[in-house]
Length: 130
Image (cartoon, rainbow, N blue to C red; front, side, top):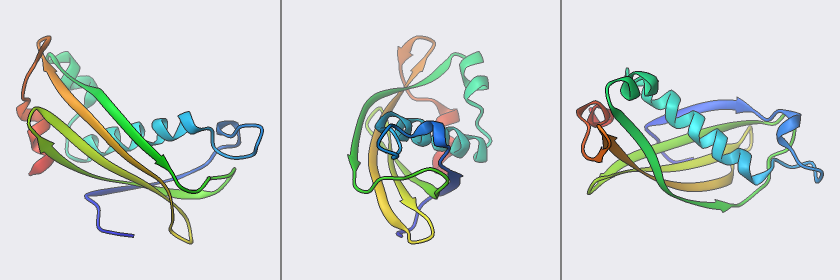
């Protein structure tokens, strides 16, 4: 497993799996979103407080590569790195099964900030890079 700015360990819940006994593809997006929100909180940035101050970070594009499935009751770690690319905040997100650290999902989530309803930079979101 490579180096990441943030890691969050979770466990697959049985209701997140489909009839095949593997995590439904849409649930990986939930895992990644939860990881981004927890990362922001670790930086002292509340998604709710941002919204109250007119700043909304919204997803513009998601690319996901599914490598290996996760199954019920398996532990996994959701990892991320983030960088700025023009007006976008780009999250590179990987999910690894534990304990074997097998890569299950590789994702790229491009987000933008809407400040008072207009595309713009947010000093609060800039704190992610400090």
